[in-house]
Image 1 (cartoon, rainbow, N blue to C red):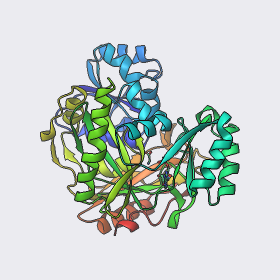
Image 2 (cartoon, rainbow, N blue to C red):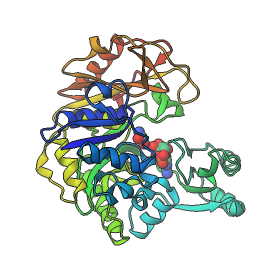
Image 3 (cartoon, helix red, strand yellow):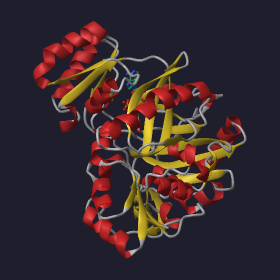
Image 4 (tube, rainbow, N blue to C red):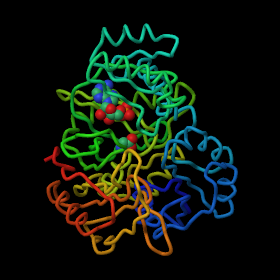
Length: 421
Ligand code: AMP
Ligand code: GLY
């Protein structure tokens, strides 16, 4: 089977890598890709926002499965458009993608289907007085822009006064139209884990639980980022926690989406807050996480192409999975100085080949080709992923790899995986 992967970050490099070693994969194409992905896939020269062009490309190249990496094309209806043309898509339809595209929708959906999550209310700018009252009555709280804000739309104020001034800024256009509506919710204590469920509309299977590191600097200091590193499996998500998440979170989402007329096909990312062995939902994403995927797929022993194809066709084949956690993995993100804010890039990257071996995969994220050289291109540049028979070994391998790689203006966290030891 020929496959098209949509996207061009570290997550898509990991997805493409896992597809490329699958027994049921034929030719793999990617759009837009990056230099790392293009060493293992062919370039599809298409505009991914033009769904008709994407469909034409699939037909011309005998592509029967499209795997969508990022949320935006899904929120824009890519799965709906391609499915109509007879192409199978691993990724949900627009209505189901609302679970990520609108936090208000996700919270109302969870309330309707009794899925455990933080108490909340949603407000628009005309309801500022009520929003302020809610903050005062419920502090500590978290403020969330309703719409997609590139992973940045969540603020965690230290005081109620700070929350009220952040509310003003958000309604004032801090996240553009994404913060025209704001979800204010109870601050939850606990430890976080990310769980990816591969869903076929009715049935699902979960991959190894992982843990992200959202803050920019060591010791969870600095701004929230898209993620500075991840490891898997994450012990905080014990078998008991996962069993509860299956029964009380993932199964009800599938049931709920089916009864709303939009069966959920694709990866359902459940961001969990775990306290005293009980998981509650922090957020849903309608795609694989980045950088968690780099760790999760590195230890998945499976015919990944067969798995995603079976899910896309509504007939999940769990026998494609041999082991979800054949080893431990730790992914350390090498980023450009300044990330998650403005950063300078365009610097030549050295050492990727020297660092790579059977236990070290360098996934490329923000890179581009400049006259045959790979240069940095954006905030998160590489996901250096070490494998080991246990987490400590995986961490050690990852940092040995990191130290062999160099480019100007880079930084990384030194404590990825530490919490899991
Ligand atoms: P989100 O984009 O919703 O995942 O939020 C980003 C990050 O903010 C999460 O990964 C958590 O670390 C934190 N966060 C979000 N909601 C809550 C909450 N209700 N309580 C505590 N922390 C939260
Ligand atoms: N690493 C968090 C996310 O992918 O949303």
